[in-house]
Every structure is written in C-alpha cells, then in structure tokens.
Length: 348
Image 1 (spheres, one colour):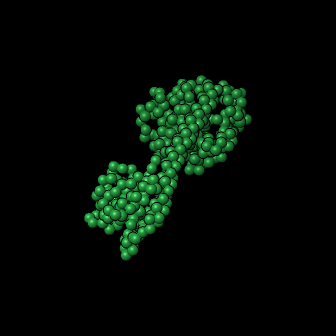
Image 2 (cartoon, helix red, strand yellow; image 1 turned 180 degrees about the horizontal axis):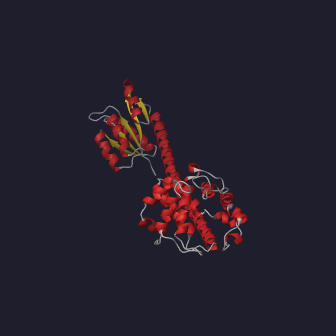
Image 3 (cartoon, one colour; image 1 turned 60 degrees about the horizontal axis):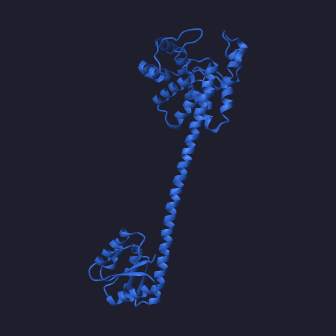
C-alpha cells in the first residue's frame, strides 16, 4: 500500500515542488496551506508522514506539532525551518518532531529524510504490533499456566481429601472427622485474623493431622480395649510419622509442622516434643481444642456423643493446661448456632 504524505506550507510553490518530488517517489500526496486545513485532512486520511513549515500565517507549525500526535501517535513529522530559526527547530524536536530541514533545502536531502522517517515509522509500528502480540501471547500462556496450576491444586486437594476419608473409614469414623476438624480449625483461624496462604496451610494441617496413622498397625489402631504401655508408645509416634511423610513435600512443609505438634499441650506435657505455650505452632494450639470438640460431640463405640455444655465445661477445666487460654476464651465466645453451622450437624 502506498504511503500517504501531507505537505503543509503557506507557499504554494514549495507545496507543489514537494508534491511533485513525492509523487515521483510513489507517495500519495495531500496539500494544506494552513494548520486548520491540515487537521481537516488528518481527520479524513490515514497520513503516514507530515512535512510542515514552522512559520505560517495564523496557527504555526509548532501548534500543528503540539496536537498532531493526538490524531495518531505514529505519524512521522518533518519540520521545515529557516536558518535563522534554529531554536524553534530544536523546540520542535523536543515536542516530538522526528527531524527537521532548513531552507533553502536540497530536494535530494528531503527525499532521503522522508524515506528514512517512513522506514523508521514502519519499524516502530512493527515493533509495537510485535509487543502487543507478545503481551497477548504472554497473557494467554499465563492464563493457561494459571489454569493448569489451579487444576493441579484442585487435584492435590481431591487426592488429599480422598486419602483422609480412607483413613477415617479405616478407624470406623462416623462421617468425616478430619474434614470437620478442618472446618473448625479454619473457623477459629479466621477469628484470630489468619488469612490467605497461612489459612490454607492451617486447613491442610488439620485435614491431614492423622496421616501418620498409616504407619500404625491395625492391631493397635483398631484395638477395642485400652492400649498397654508399649502400644501407647507406638500410637504416640504417629505425629512424627506424619511429619516425616509430609515434610518432604514442598507445599506441605508448613502443614507438616502442624501435624507434628497436634498432640502437644499448652502446659508442656504433650508429645512428641513437650512444647509449651507459644512454642507450639498456632495451628497445633487451635487443633488441640477443636479435636476435643469433635471427639466429644461424636458417637464412639464405647459411649454416645456428649452435649456441647459438657464439652464446654471440659474445655474450661483444661484452660491453661491442655488448651491455650486465648483460644479457649474465643471458643466460649462463639454461639452454639455458629458451631452447629460449622459442624453441619446439631449438638446435644
């Protein structure tokens, strides 16, 4: 497609000379004797390059230059000035002119300058199009990667949930104990101001808290009677077994710390490390309480579920020994209706 050139000059002889020259170079030419006519043409034609005199009656070429980029920022502009007006020529360069030539000018110089500016404009437009195309491709690929990562995270979550349900079924749990304590844990976590990634890690730690029981034999795990001392030693290894399994998985390192500490007690008499107070990760302190809540409000082979009042009384009794006092007080401040909604069931 032929390139279109607009020549703006109040002297007809100069306009005709430049037009004749540009036509020989196979450009399409338009003429304007003043700035207002120039803008009329710019509004109706796809101009590639403007050649404009600086000094004209009425609005000057400088005023044309100030506004021309608003019409099309890619238009190339070549200014024509007299030898005595170099300061204005340099001002035009600062305002966005691509080049200038001085009167009297050699026509070959004009042709060469126009060709260079057109070529530079073409390269700039190609670069812009390439950048837009590249940005679009980057956005497209980023969205694909984001979707893949979301799908992968969803698959991880589904796999972990299925595994936990299998563990709950192994222990003859009614419903899903692990999912309930996860809901309780995140509920408390939000009340404590935990959010974002930290809350997600807290949820995973609660969901997977008993993953270490994979390493406990059925003879011990499913024993109907009380465990003897040796059996308790084996049973109490499950936090460490769970930690050993998950700490090797990069995205489960923080949940693994919660799993390791979920049987610690606030007074330091828990296991496996006898951590005390705030030495216990916040996830472990939250879990200790909500695990008791779920265990006591669920039916067991050896007893029926207890009432929420009985659970609350036990939690108050163990405030500061088994349970973090701050978390205990938060638990007590939450209504029965809120706990039942979180549990998905009615309490006695």
